[in-house]
Amino acid sequence: MPEVDFAIAGAGALGSIIGAHLARSGQSVVMLVRARRAHQIAQDGLRIQGLAEFSQPVPALTDPSELTDASVLIIATKTYATEAVLASLGRADVGVAFSIQNGMMKNEQLTATFGKERVLGSLANLSGEMLDSGEVLFTRNANLFVGELDGRDSARARRIAATIDAAGVRASADPDILSLEWSKFASWVPMMALSVITRALTWKYVIDPGTALVVVRLVREVGMLAAACGVRLSDRTTLPVAAICRESDQDALALLRIFGLDMKSNAPEHRMSTLQDLEAGRPLEVEETLGHAMRKAAQLNLSLPLLSSFYDLVAGIDRIRG
Image (cartoon, rainbow, N blue to C red; front, side, top):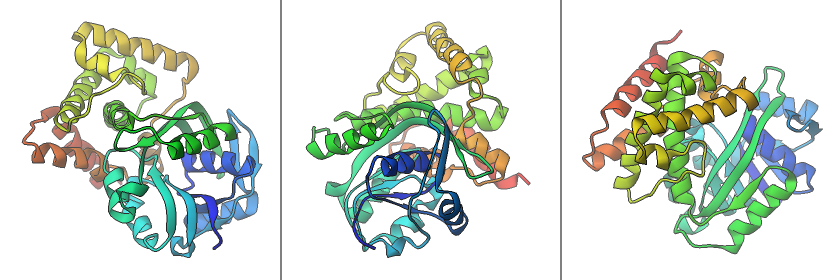
């Protein structure tokens, strides 16, 4: 296949949102998808509703090995599909690659495939939901960050971020990308775990004093792991995780309540993608996220008892349901 500006592996909610906006703005885009999703895209294009409403034709490949050249590769699959996708992309000439997946395992996988010099860090502070019809409901457009893993400023990170931002998905380059990635992970872990346990809308377990205290304690354990890896948390992602780690329980709960009330007002129907997967009968992202964190903790001889318990519990739910 001829060189494209952007190849996007995965056409779930976020991959579809980014791909549709980039293609609409005039970038050459190809989606790397499964056969059923490729059929939907061939029939109707990438259909977006919510914050933006349009349908965009985009070419799709069901065999990633057919991709020969891409200036930018974005990995937007579920984490458990990463290994197979990257194995089939090993011969592609990729200028730079980054992943908007959950967890911290993604950068290691990309580096092993393409080499560290061609990998950026990234996180997507966006929200969307894939509907049964194949349309994607775009619900939150906060920021997509990209940056160099070694912490330096770079023209390529700024250029990629500017291109995505100009297409309509808010994006920016940030040299402190590892801090932001870990900070998002510290936000994601408790909300992912509690979405599986409570099966509730996000704002509800962020506001409830009992479940909110669990959020605080899980954030703090991920913060301990980040510190052991030499990374400082930030307040610039989903939750103010640095402040939650620093403040008293009472003040941390007050911060969570502010966040929860804001969600109740502005995103009252928000459900974690993990809950969407659970209710749809899809596998959960456990081993590459919570499991990877536990393996890191073991390597560092770090005890994280609450995270360990939730890892066991969520993994068990994933195995025995249905």
